[in-house]
Image 1: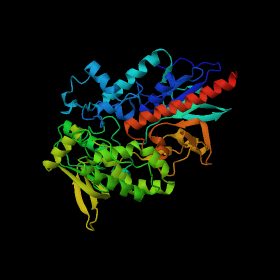
Image 2: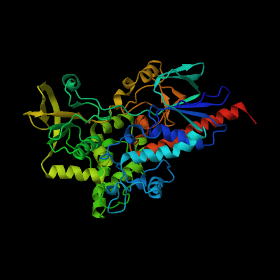
Image 3: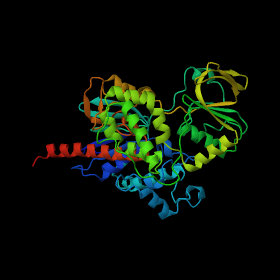
Image 4: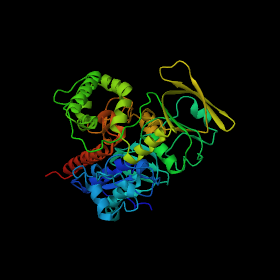
Length: 478
């Protein structure tokens, strides 16, 4: 259902492109903010409901949130809201594995999408937020406003645009995409519906990547009854870690005397982990403290040091910071113990199709001799291709060509200011074009975990509300 025509009066219009957690969060908080005058808020999202996005629009029962429900919320000031929502509705009655022995909840991911959609529902019903169920095809600057074109033939004029699109899908390494494109069990993008359907129960599977998506894939295959051997290969062979058996207190202080060097920061983290261990606190408490102080730490690092950190330390950070749910960890542990899962450090040097097989040349790390192995299926789970965001959608490329967008120098997304205003190639910020969510990670640092994404959505909504209040004051001076 398309929204009613937007007002033709002087009412300000805010367009949000993307209705996942980032976009839905901005719409929700903006609708509740003091904006001076009520704006028309339009969210462009092809999915049927706002608040799902790629992560939470999944029916796969193996896909679970990887943060305890008590730490997930659309409200930065009430982190327990999602868990309270679950308990009030007995929403995991059909999912006994959701509750852990310590009382924490790790429900299926789709449930969080239902929770966010439930918060947006009354705002959609009363017209505070409008859902345009269409994909954006063009964004152009015209006479001081933005014109948003969509694939339903609509044109929406807006005063402020917030880009809250998802990070791009993984990119198949090297020549694999071309060489293996014709094979029915080459899965280049696991986010596509039914991506794993072609994999048979006894297939030998090569998973390229070893992070959260790889864990999801292995858990999903197990849920479907797959019992064939799986090799998970990544450059360093680092597997995503699990949660501590019991909650750990935050440990360490990294901002009182914030370092300006990636190497020094690493040394400080290692020292803090040793000190925490001496006090009976696991590394989880230290990493969680680094995350909590992440924005200040990131701001203290010069761009060259940010690049060094991303290039050398990001894989280690990701496997400790983005932990897998206990249920998924149990599946992986069982597969390793049974000898069905082999985790390999290295790379895929080459691959070719031989009949029904995929013959892969694997280059183990620190070994000169490559391995030749046949597989029945190959799945790419290398993580978001942040550096390719401008090529994922034509309207983003056009905005960049017109001087409105540029890649962040760290390669983590789109360049923006500390107020989340987009920066073009000239280095000039546009106060009417904002970036919300993981695509702003290059400026804000830690913007992939759900708590940080919702905090940033709240922040962006506040920035937009302030701009609208200034507009209202200028239009109606005292």
